[in-house]
View 1: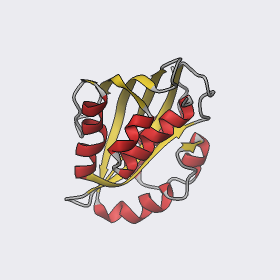
View 2: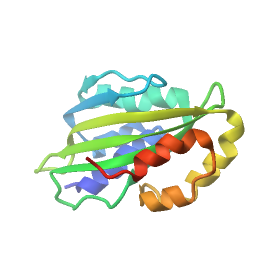
View 3: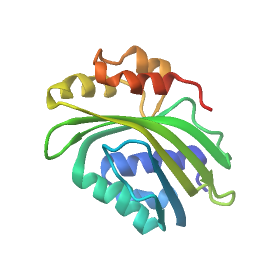
View 4: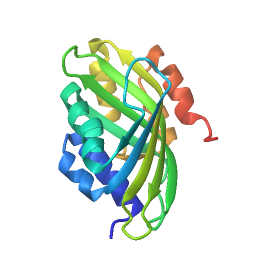
Length: 179
């Protein structure tokens, strides 16, 4: 049986490493994904059902566009037998075509199967997705590659953040208290 923490970590390993096969260790076959996007700089379908389609959206197609992906869950991991879990997240990545850097943040809301610990439903809210020039690549990758991965304290993330004005809204969001 999986734990909630392991399911989340396998999802991140699948997405960040472009390894869709790992999603079987994270999601139920009939899992549901809901996407709430509050920015125009990235798009996802609002609702997806089933392991295959979820893998296509969150890993395969995502991996065709982005590389150098680092996803962080902010705060402490869930208890092993958690049925639900909420945490803020931060992602940093580069666009394979343009070389631009993306830094985004939002909220994960997880629901787990009591029997297996696998994800039954995931709602991903994207609050901000900042596009930075390729000239910021070194500073952003130096920052995220030195953070605890994939579980990171917001204070650590903020204290090590580069001084780039475009990150201000992201930094303010990740340090704000969850509603």
